[in-house]
Image (cartoon, rainbow, N blue to C red; front, side, top):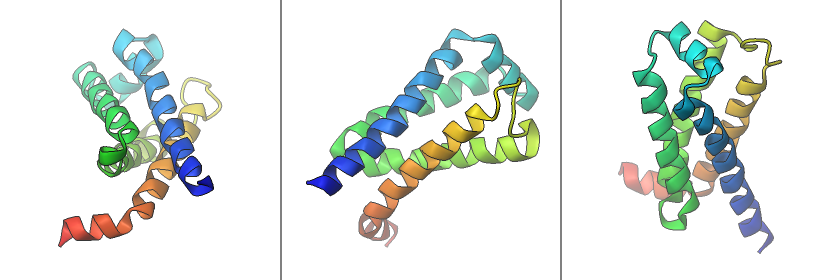
Length: 126
């Protein structure tokens, strides 16, 4: 029971962080536009990644598809983390590294969920 609650908290944490950032991506906030302009993928990259993150949220909250959402979430967050490390830097627009930290937290939540179902992952790869 306690373990099940822990995994639901991980799902909810990842989903809430992703949903919160979706608002900025889909409304075209100046911070979000600035980040994706620096990457050279504004507006299509911003909207495309927003749609992918929305799919992750939906998949991760449905128990049957949670593993697929977590795998996709890991992939997106690896991209975000590398982008912060090599292009944007950890601190973006004087945010104190908040975006980077949120990407790390989301990645860790998704990675733990993937590890929980590692036997399913191995079966899918075979």
